[in-house]
Length: 210
View 1: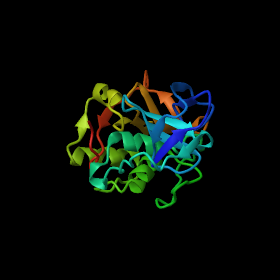
View 2 (view 1 turned 60 degrees about the vertical axis):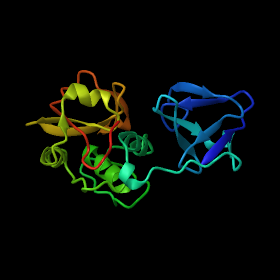
View 3 (view 1 turned 90 degrees about the horizontal axis):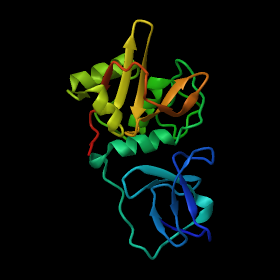
């Protein structure tokens, strides 16, 4: 859907869905933006193909501009994975929770449940299992493993930390940050990839990467 910016002084584009996220760009009054959402904080693809967020309070539907169709399911991209996960930023971390994968807005996640929910919402096939270790095995079985250095640079790739003391999985945003359910003290949010002891990385089977 196309939206026109109606804020006289322009509109801040933020790195996540809320005013607590940093401003990464500015849209001018009259600019036309494209988003699949219809209200609240809308995910917007910027000219450098990163995902930003704008408040719908300062936008109006532009019916005169040509409508750009959403990508077909078989054209699902890593950036779409990031955008879907970002819609849950601010949710609490709940260890061991099992959410309804059809629920568009669950109350909370642990790390692997967030990934499984994102893939289910986007109808990624083959289906992503639950549990970080099982998710890594899923990627290994489909030959989608990559180096950790590559995973840090690819939006929608997965970074894993598999160890005897516990396993963890996150979604890379491709810019040195993650969107993840980090822990009970942090919840779901954006965090740095640096110094986290990643042991494996992979692309999600069934997802297209640029």
